[in-house]
Figure 1 (cartoon, rainbow, N blue to C red):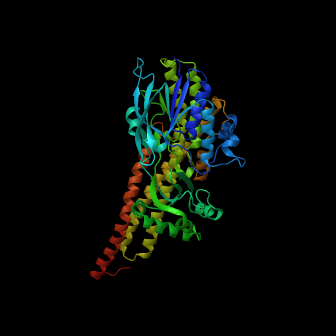
Figure 2 (cartoon, rainbow, N blue to C red):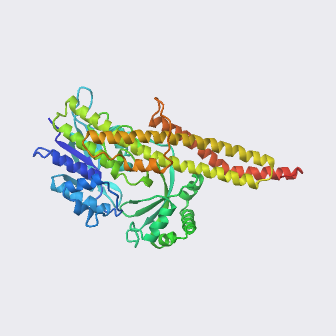
Length: 497
């Protein structure tokens, strides 16, 4: 039996692209494509930046105008709504207001892999944030998970399907303002506020069912500062007010007038260890496969790379039996191709994070220089210089890691171009990665060692990140130690300075 039944979990743009493609490629009366989405409507009002291949595909589907409007740019909700209507038009069965609650394998191959999968879905109560008694079982020859970066954290996908993720153990510390949807600025910031925010740092927008967020990454927020800001909404609001005043722009004036609340969270980079399940006919696409760094934009671009690999997978599966070795070969080929894009996006986020962390250590060094100049006691000066030397060595280690990340990035960018060309797609590379390599001291030299890997690089970054945290936590006690040393010397009658 060939692949006839496809279930897509997640009704964002990438999930909708995949469902439409499956319905169009398997356009037999015996085929069945089902899309499961928790939401019962689309409301995200942020306007995504769409690469040309995405725009071209919307045109191929005949919905470019409906999705993007006359201005050729529209809120994500409009794009998703147009894709949803297209999906219904090509026969995709929509199960809106449902979530997956259980997954079980069906028939097995001789090597132990399941030939099909049964997915139990339950109705979702948005008010009480819980499942209802409504249940349905969907059978699939292929399961596509387009559930996003947070959705893939479900134990169901980890435990049953075996999708484990690797995370970069280093964070970019972020602050965000939360806006009512009725806000006069909402996601569509006025020109003055947009310019002020751009001066602060890179930004992105995030939307949930009842709130809209403006994410602002501040480069000089230490771990201890972040913990304090996260614990206190009032402290965070004061910080944002001070930052806004520093740029002579009334950012907090808008926030105070329109914000429902403010809060803070950490930005982490993670990627899937595998984009195919080890035992089930199941794959990952979009943010479920790799989480983008907010300052490099949304995941729709990388997700579309996954969709293109999915197109190749469907073409291969159309001519195979779900029990055949060729079917497994096609899944492995999908993973080999998509892994390049996943790794490229992960390296992109790594470069941004390293740039941020190097800036924190450099700031620490500058603080040591200021304290050294202001301190009179020789013992105190020696202590400061010792800490500054340690920070300098740590910064040099991070810069070496940046060099490795950039070398990985160049190799991956070349691989992306090669894969696109082999698939007869216009070679375009990873535009975000290209920008990061060009814009963040992209002067990587030398070559990678034969035993180097992204996992090894991430492990090294994690170690230096811990050292940086230890160093920053010691700075406040260091200041106290300096005062104690000088006071003790004065008490003993030793001349200070």
